[in-house]
Image (tube, rainbow, N blue to C red; front, top):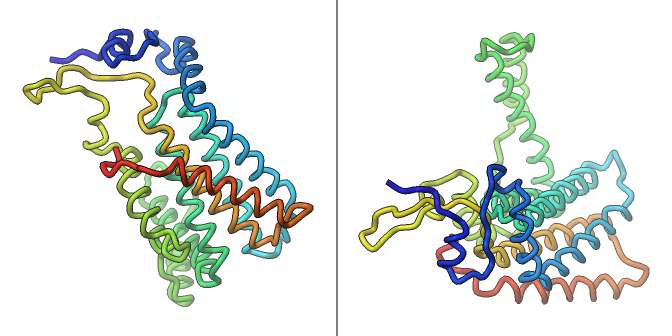
Length: 288
């Protein structure tokens, strides 16, 4: 049998000078604040740059004028808003030591940016993204019709009507990998980061659960582990930031956004790219 580890003992065993004893509030308790303070000190330079990027993205959002009848402008602006929200969520979660939840937020950020960049660059993908809504409507209505507890008043005719519309328009579902391909992000970003590194945490795979236990010399589980951690938090933040930058640049191109001096935007972009590229280097091959 194995007990959930005493975090005060765990930190001592791992050579960390900080002592932490979780109370019944877990990661919502006041005891995590000390850990959070140490995390912010350790990653101060990276967090400062993340905060600057966050401000720059908001500066873009608050500066653009969206033509509400232009589908590309509306969708890309909304996706950037969605993406920066996931980005901020990831930072807040990592500051509390919730690395698994932060990975889920970053994975959602990647999805937003895949679609954003594809829609920004390609008329075909703009149409595909809008058409995907019809596919989703069909799935939703089908589920409602098969759910005896649904309060929605729907008929089989509604289902057949949407099926006919989809058939007439020749609509085919477009998956997230296809969006990543048109975003020029299908190799490293989709295959390595989205699929190999982040998906196991999102789907609670057996492999990802290994972070929650420790094995002894006999390869038996000796303890279960629960509490804040910052394993590869710097790598995760750097990747999230660079991904957000890719979304930022796509929206900037759609709206032909610039600062008072065009050179200022390029300088700003170059500084962010150089910093986060350096922080991304050496991403572990095991993607744990």
